[in-house]
Length: 408
Picture (tube, rainbow, N blue to C red):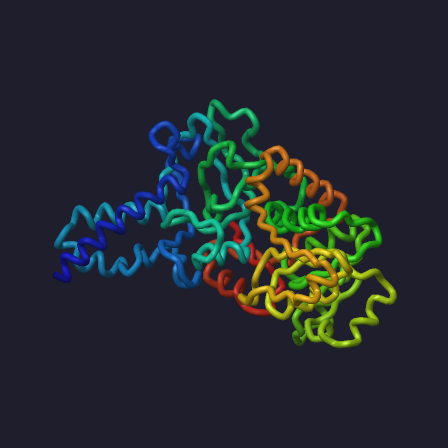
């Protein structure tokens, strides 16, 4: 009975890993190509086969399938050698030594240069995100790659170009891949690598929230929590470029002065802690500056309630994250007597509601800010791909203001 059960699990796992091949760039015989040369290339990818703790479910070598280790496979290989060999071969091809054939049709062979670890990546691996790819899947939604070769039908890209994903779920935590041309957006290669790698998610979210919910004018103020996050740092810089004043709320910590100085160097006008935001003295804060008409919430819970209390009449709070894993609680009196508005923002939905050309225009707008020195990448720690475990662990620690970027 145990052997039959194990055999069933092996067969199911083998089917799972074969399905990963399309996610890694294979699109059937006509477009299964990865490389412009006939020489096989070594491709490494960080893959998760089920949802859970990212530090445990993402692996590049040891755990082949959920609940079935390489040791278990080898121990019972005498029972079904052909199936075991095929299953291990499929797994190691996906995870380690994927052979990439010639690019054909509308495919683009890219070499990943750098890919960050974002909160949305962690949420996707945990299984609590609005978009979940079919498992097993390659992790990572953002990054920058360089074009190695293009298919005969590709007209908008050429070898040497830099590209970023057009949409989430592409799987950027890998060394190489082949994607369709429409899955990629070209970015200028004269901007810093870290800026290009972190361009497609956080700065886009920050820009759209500043532009789409309130008609803000130079001199108006914006309040936000999680101000040291990737989005928060982008909000500070883009707001400063637009002539907006920012009130930036962060959690108290031992090095609060160091964090405050860094955020102010980006253009933050005020940096206050969650505890300071709750004090009665905050009512005197707005004697010297206008009450904010826009609040940006990435935390939820008590923090979001405090943001609402600071808004001017008719103002809007936009929620784009829930780090506290607590609901937004809005006072009835604030909704009635101040006519406050509660909205949500998700970049993936914005992309669905707008054309690819509009997203490309957004990317170019942000690149112009980067070139002018008005938008820099968040504080980053570059980590080699093979050290992904430490990067994943660091990305989930509290009070870590440095974004982890996997380098290939």
